Length: 220
Image 1 (cartoon, rainbow, N blue to C red):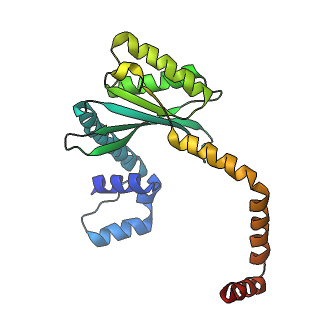
Image 2: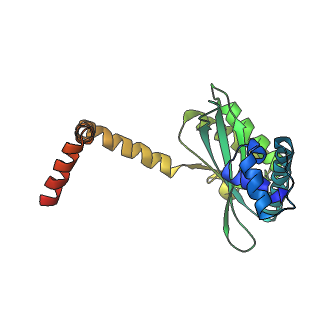
Image 3: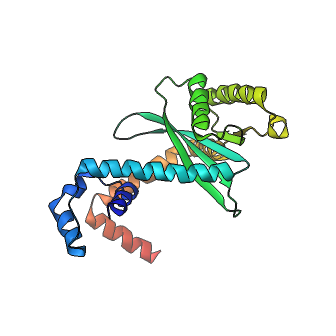
């Protein structure tokens, strides 16, 4: 039961103090009279056990993979106001299913440098024991990423032969390139978008305007 609660807390991002709530305890005792109340400290420990168990399972998966590709991106925690680099592994398992798993959130304090990015990625690969299996690394087109991947490529080239002579080691993120293209396109019609937004605000400010607008829309 504690294992199930720990998994529920992790998957739904509930606060640890939930298990001490009187209504939670009542609900669990209604489900089974054998349920015993646990503290937030106990359930926190249980969550760490779940994490370690899942980490071992993922290590077994990555160990069986022959090639692993990585994607990285920088991400900001809204409540902590701290910047992280998320590292995600992509690989095909023994059943020929594509797996996508987050390996780590690396705290990268500003100013982010190429050395910090390269060091964070390399330490993550060492921890997961997959540095000899890396096929490609996809990043956006920030200058520090360019330098970081060049540094990593040199490091990897010294210890092993890269696939395709290293030509595919650094992959530029297509989504980031497409995002830049769309932003440039929207900039051309920015004044039109602004007018439409102001019109919508004007209509939504009054129930009467919304009704009149709805009637006009139906007539058209």
